[in-house]
Amino acid sequence: MLTIQRYIIFLLFFSLTSSSYAQLGGKSTFQFLNLVSSARPAALGGNAIATHADDVTLVWQNPSQLQYSMDKQLALSYVGYVADIKFGDVAYAQSLGKLGMYAATFHFVNYGSFDRTDETSTVIGSYKSGEYALAMSWSKALDSSLFIGASIKGILSDLGDYTSNGVAADIGLTWTNSDKLVCATLLAKNMGTQLKKYVDGDREPLPFEIQAGISTQLKNAPFRFSIIGQQLQKFDLTYQDPLKSGVDPLTGETKSEDISFTKKLVRHIIVNVEILFTKNFNVRLGYNFLRRNELGFPEKKGLSGISGGFGFKVNKFNLSYARSVFNTAGGSNHFTVTTSLSSFKKQKN
Image (cartoon, rainbow, N blue to C red; front, side, top):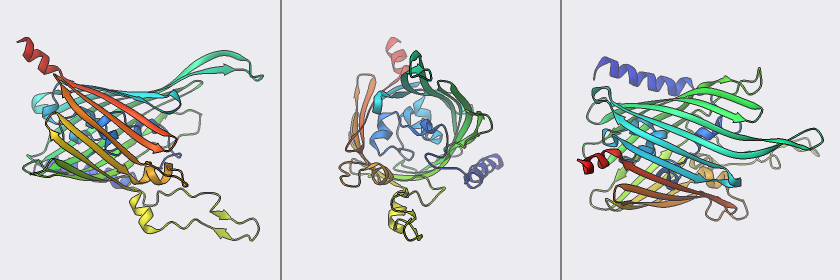
């Protein structure tokens, strides 16, 4: 392996260890970067970093999944979210030969319109609110089985009178075996900083995260299984219920909710499976332990943390749908359309 390639890999692992200061949800800004728009990863438990497939929508989650076969792919994704919030992606990939593969992804969230009022609650106008990120991604083969990828993201958050912007980067490594049936990946996401703060003097960290995953596709059966490790930079992801922890006002004793090691461990795990019936039709299922334990209602978890969907090809278009369930109150519906612009050029010729 060339010296420059070893240097790049060193930078990846250095970034994983040096960014361990990062915070989890509720303690960092630009959380919209973690919203999953495209249907394939949404159906697979919200994470498809180890899914080795010819799908440009995977690049937003893992730039090292950007492959030469995605050249001239265009994808549009849309999600109807809770409280009439809408978000989505537009992604495009292009090969530049020896320079590698490049892709651009525009990620947006539309929170809608809000009334602007004065101190007496009189409506004096309205304003719109949204957040946006533009990612430029690059990947290159280090050898026949190892890819490195990186993304740089420009971020803008417009929340009425409060605006902020920043910059973030993702970097990952993806390895596949000779027959492409096994895929393993290591990824550092959202390393960066807030450039313009919402409030002067109050700089917030970005939602940095370390992820790793592995998938295997059975050689003689239409199944591809994946297991993903999320939020690996911090072991204990449990939410401490204030009613079950803190200082008892009667006895003065400090109490804490007893969360077992196993329950802490499984919160890092996402498992999923794709059933590849044919080249043009597949079904996807996923289970996100963290989502089920943190978002599901304690009394009735129902299908919390479970997601599913399907994808099929019609003429030159790949159509995908996914449903992600957060708790018994509801979930989100994801729609994605993907096509290759080169297929239209071939038809014209």
